[in-house]
Length: 131
Image (tube, rainbow, N blue to C red; front, side, top):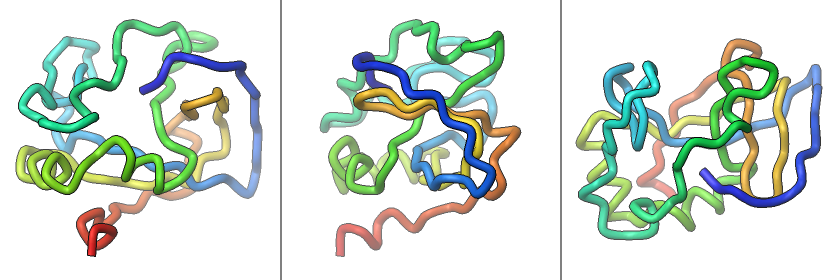
């Protein structure tokens, strides 16, 4: 999601909750699908979500693994996704989730993690956060 800051490597057996928006279908994505094809699923968003910097970044391929972007707290998701954009994305095949991640790298404005080592995944009712 973000491209700045120093990396802090983490291995936490108990896990840390990380928050993200992701496509339900592997053929869809905010910018790229699961095959790394550019699909730009947020092109019709009106708020800050459309402006997230999502060019190629080596941090998503550390140690030749697929690392996924996330926020370290729910407040950061609220910063990037307005109520209108969140509803648009939910209506167009996306879900807000949280992962209990054990392998992650923290950067200044982003945390990347391995989905395959996460202890748990939950879907968040993101719209309730706007009530």
